Length: 355
Image 1 (cartoon, rainbow, N blue to C red):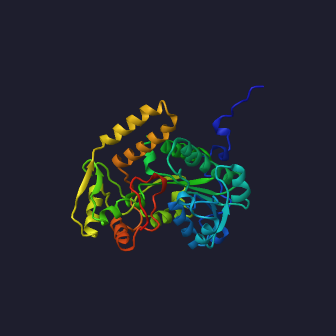
Image 2: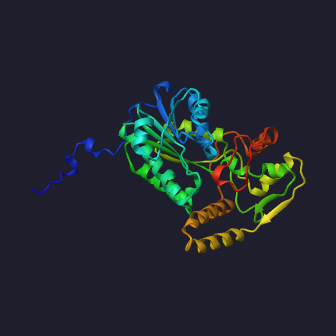
Image 3: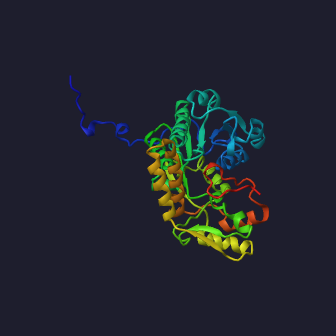
């Protein structure tokens, strides 16, 4: 027989309640950190490393899940990674392999996942495999275990998705927000200090600062790795950040490339001199590569890399301010102590040698 819909007045109050947030297996706001197991995916990445250390310092039961060879160019061995994360349970596996993730990373009950995963190059397949699927694997594993909370390191640039890695991140964000099994915090930082550090050694050596256009076509209030790690760690216990998307920038006003150069010339006491590159150069390069990619498919990712360069040379990266370390503080520290640990990796436009 056909179903009969009951009049609204006959429905019980419980059936009329709006959907509630998923019930957490553990109250993260009151639990002792040592009783909360937090798995960090992407722990050896630039931000992931600071997040892992921040969580260890807070006393969490941290699982640092890593490839057996990690870091820039895969230079870190398993022993290097264990030594870097003393106080954590370091485990090795493959985030792209669901079985590896379950058998190794989630072999014990995990309460929280902090995903700092990011594609190494921004290439099309790499973006889908890492920025989307690998982080989704972590979410699904957490849900299957009845975990509590998922913290994602995303990026402010997904607000204007023109690149494959941005579309992959946005697709992941949508999947996180569509599920109701665990609470989540999605953190979208502007730019990292390392992404603005590429010309420190250039200026220090007395060479011209390279900038696109007039140096004022984009601006950013970048955030330090330590300040961002605090923001991400706070998402575990701060209920105001549950089921929220959080744009995050560093303290102070947004700074243009021209203003960045002025800070560097002042710190190193150098006479300002510039090489100004027209933005049209990017367009010409991208157009040429895309034309030839029709005949040589291997060039498709090369065109994507050029598009990434153009995007960051022209788009503003601005968000509400968090933290205490300013870009000038960072540049001053670099001027005094060098760039060790600031390697840019595969997406570098200006090489950093860490010296």
